[in-house]
Length: 316
Image (cartoon, rainbow, N blue to C red; front, side):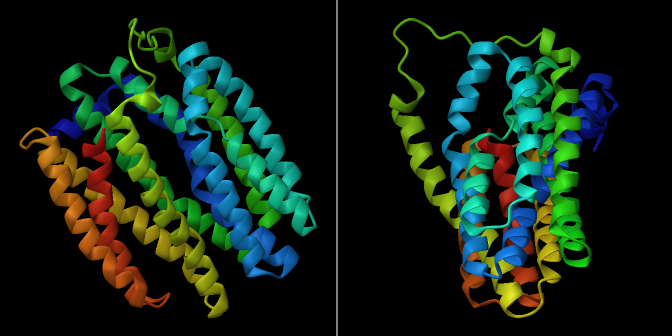
């Protein structure tokens, strides 16, 4: 616990966590806000799932491009360009009233998302000493996942009790506050992109990275299906209000798992720990196919998320 307190007491670390917090809340809200907006506007769960899916696919496939922009231009320009642009696009999406318009804007939102997490992770290396970076990653993972507790709950509550448009408008405000605040973080002055040495292979040509990309595709498909299936299943069973609780439980499990993994990160090999946690995560995910959007799904999701929280610490 003392190792975590050292990070939390660090003024620069506090600034980094606080400035990125609003945008991360928005990220936790956006998928469910899109789903409920499309579902309530079109009356179709299939179209809502399609819109949420294309948003996720567009975001995942263009993450590398946003990373390249950061390497080339630094973090300030991409953040100050994408954050306001993304906020405007969310507002435009909230005014959509046809299937085609909503799906198209959901896709555009995916590839125009500001690089919040892509910016925060590298900044830890210029925020804390080298021997504290792994612990800082654990703290960052915990904070990142903790917003996942509030994001889905806020999105579900506002969408079902008021209007998805209000949830989307809140996302827009939070993303511009968080994105622009992060772009003024003092650590940006000290961060320098890693220089590419002559003769280095492009990232996508490195065998290890190719393997990680293939792995990421399959994991992404699984999590993407989960993110769409939960609200769709819950809506079909007339228990849509449980969606936010299920995602909140998953996020809470990620927080606890990340903190536990961070506490042992110096006592074990990252590769060995990653393999063991990965195996446990796979086994615990198998019963998910037999759950119902109630206690059974909550229990399985909680056990899975404990493992996935640890994976995020050792993955880096």
